[in-house]
Length: 212
Image 1 (cartoon, rainbow, N blue to C red):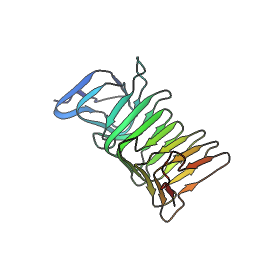
Image 2: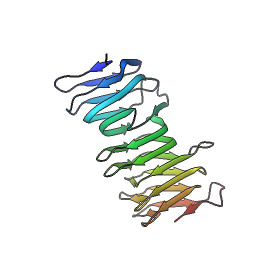
Image 3: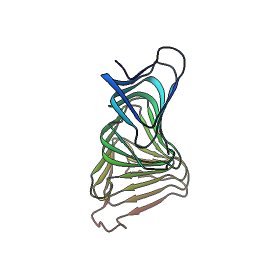
Image 4: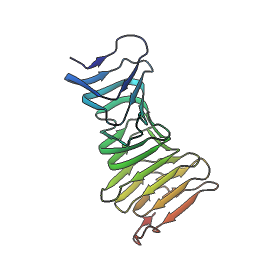
């Protein structure tokens, strides 16, 4: 059967252990605005289905450890919002997708080790920190990255951020972009700055860092 199956009403599931779905589905939410809180170290055997309107929180957890999530939008599908909580540090590994109409909001820190496709009307909004292509691992974001106030994007040497419009757009204030990889907007701008924003290009030692 399914590990956790929700039929009626609104529910919250907090997982700091293991949830297993022998049917291949670990959690199946209904279409209400439900909430899934994942602590670092939590495990799911099977897909996690948000029902289209649920919120998934990548939390700090009781011991403030870093967490790893694999397959956003694939293994974890049907969530309207995926949030990295303030003070939390997570790594997104493998191939992920921000589904059309969904939002990934980073109030904490997310390290991307793999790829993340921003699909259709999906949004990737950085209020905290996004690191792409953490050292020794490649990272690739295809789709726009939106900066809120005080957002920080670090694109490492093996990182690429690419979008059909602006690759990175700062709609808040006092954001920072540090680039040692590739940032490409096609046909839009590489980076669209606003008041108080800062860009450092190639200052991490890669003189082939490029923004275009």
